[in-house]
Each structure stands twice: as structure tokens, then as C-alpha cells.
Amino acid sequence: MIFLLTVSLAVAQDAQEWFRDARFGMFIHWGVYSLMGKGEWVMENDRITVADYETLPSRFNPVDYDPAEWVRVAKDAGVRYVTITSKHHDGFAMWDSKVSDYDVVDRTPYGKDVLKALAEECRTAGIKLFFYHSQLDWHHPDYYPRGNTGRHTGRLEAGDFNRYLDYMNAQVAELAGGEYGELGGFWFDGWWDQQVNEADKSDRTTHVDWKLKETYDLIHRLQPQALIGNNHHVAPFEGEGFQMFERDLPGANTFGYNTTQVGTLPLESCDTINGSWGFNASDRAFKSTKDLIHYLVRAAGSDANLLLNVGPTPEGNFSPEVVERLREIGAWTREFGETIYGTRGGPMKPQPWGTMTSKDGVLYVHVLDANAPERLVLPGTAGLGVRDARLFGSGREVKVESTPDVTLHLPSDAQQAVDTIIIVRPRSVFIAETPLHRRGGRSLASHR
Ligand code: FHN
Image (cartoon, rainbow, N blue to C red; front, side, top):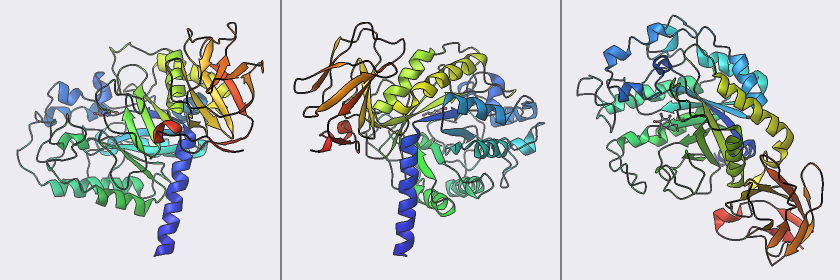
């Protein structure tokens, strides 16, 4: 028993280390909602009843869906894992579910298991696969009591929540049962729908008992290495293997979801390339490649992964704007990826002008702001003797002073268009373990 526990703990730790090293993932929101071109919340936002929404699947025929091409684009961008919606809040299963016919195989003219095909391509390409799975369900009759959403679906005001949980767990077991290979993990969402006081992220009281332990134990029994994350916007629960932050870097709260403390689990930020998760035909607010790279670098500097979302069209295409940006990000990750993959954030806390990553005893200072000061003070590096500091690429030397924090003098003509990276080699062994800013103390564990 103790042996088994030790083994599964080691498996979980390995998975977490892998996750921390991965740094970059692709999020995919794809479902029958894509047909409406108004995002994945269209059922709720347009107050569509279950009866009306159920007519959508008969039109879902993604003839252009080419999972090998999706994975090629993802890999070329430099992502190490893909997280795709197996079921979103609309309740529609994107695989061949055995406990429901409300799925892509049974209800659409396409008739094929889109997750299966993607799982196979991911396996071939060495990309790990995660499933986004909505706990909230606007379709299932037993998702009752109704939550904070889904009140205009025309369902009977009755149901058995435990029966719903059995259904949800049965679907999770199908996904984790082996048919889709060894999974990276699960990314749950929708817990907040039953939160009594959704505005208060310190209050984890819900109208229902989600019985998370049952779901999490089930997954870990079937796939011990699978990491579980849950986008509940509150502090992590037992059994979760990473902590996520929607549309924000850990510690920031520009969106209103992220007032919870940054904990010690591996971290992940997710965000969109435009403003939408699911395909939204009128959303043209694509972020620039430069901003997206900055997001990735800042995430790494905050010791977090970036899970960057694409919302494919109903035909199964990534829009050209998305492909273009991913290609450009790929050019960057190929050249500069060693400064983010396998790194840990810090020890310098993120600064307005840039951020820091570290790996194998080397610090990478990322200067992101074109108007960064010429004299860059690196808070949190006091006492670190510097052997040398050089510009990534040219190898040109950068002048260093100790004040007592390490201070770099960035040559005025050295600034790069996207990210000016300075490699700082300490004089003594530097171990990047837990980032300074997450422990609120020093982590400059050097053997001097
Ligand atoms: O409601 C969902 C939303 O549709 C989307 O899936 C995002 C992704 O982080 N999460 C939820 C909102 O918190």
C-alpha cells in the first residue's frame, strides 16, 4: 500500500515537473456552438432552449478538419501540449460517448470522433493532450438545482444532481479509460456555476456537493499521471495538480477572476488570441504577435505556462490571422525557446520593463519594454556575484554593477524588436528551485 502510494506520488511529481518545463500549450474551444460564430456562450447569451439548440448538431460537418494539420501548426508554434474542449457548458460531447447520444458521432453528419483523431495525431507528434471538461451542463436534465447560468433552457425544474454526477463521471471515465491514450490531464470548468457567492473568491461554498474527490480519484485510478486543474477561480482543492489563472498572469487580477493566492502548485495562465474562446466571426481584435510573445515570456517569468486559445471555424479551420500569429510565435520559440522552456520564473520579480527566467544556473533577463531604462536594477539578486552578462545572440558583453542588487547597463543600440535577452552567468552555482517571488523570500541558493 505504502509502496503504491509512493509510486503514484512520484508519478504525479514527474508529471508536474514535465508540466512546469513545458511552458506553452494550445487551448482549443471547438463545438457545435462554432456554427453560430458568436462564441461558446451563445446558448446562454441568446437564451436558446435545449430544443432549439439541439438542431445545431445536424449542421455540424467540419469537412476541413485535419487534426494532423492542427497538430503541425501547434508544434510549429512551439507548444508542448494541447487542451481541447471535450464538452463545454452546452453539454455536447465531442467524442463518441457511450452514456449519451448527444455527441458528435451520433448527432452530426460528420459522424466521426474528433477527439480520437486528435489524440492519435498528438501521440505521433509527441504533444500531450488534455481535455477541457465542463462540470456545468446547460443540456442535461439532471443538472439540477440549476446554477447561476442555464436558466433559460426550457428544462423541467426538477432533476437529480447525483445522477448528473454519475453521468459526468461516466463520461470522464470514457475519456480517461485509455481510448484516447495516456493523457496529460483534465482541465475542469464550471464549478463556479454553483458557487453561492460567486463574487467572493475566498468563499468556496456551493449549492451542490460537487464530490470532487470522487471525480479526481476516478481519473487518478485510470491515469495516475494525469494532472487535474480546475478553473473554479478559488484556491485549489485536494487532488488538483496545477493552479490556473484565466486571462491573467498569476498574481495579477485585471479580469476580476483572480483574487486567489498564488499557491505552490505548477501554474498556468490561459488567454485568447483575439477576445473570444469559441469561434466568433465578428471578433477581429487579434492581439499582435509581439504582445502574444510578451505574454508567453511574462508567464514564464511568473513561473507559469501560457495556454493560448484558438477557436476553430465550424468547418474545422484555424483562421488565417491565428495561423499567421502562431507561425511567427514559432519563429521566436525556435530561436529563443531555450530562455523559456524548462526554466523557472525569477528570482527577480516581474518588473514593468521585463521579467526573468532561470535554468541550469543561468539567468535570462528579458527586456520587453522598448522604453526600458538604460540602467536595469534586478531586485532580488543582491549578493549574486556575476561572472559575466552578455546579449543573447551576439554575445556582446553587458556592463554589470552590484548596488547591491545586480544592475545591468543595457547598451542603447542593443534593443531588439520583441525581447532583448541578457544572459547572466553567476560566479557560483545558482539553483533555480522555487521562485523568489512565490515564497516572498530569497531563493538564490548558491554554494559559495
Ligand atoms: O465559461 C468559460 C468560458 O467559456 C471559457 O471556457 C473560459 C476558458 O478559461 N472559462 C470559463 C469562464 O471562466
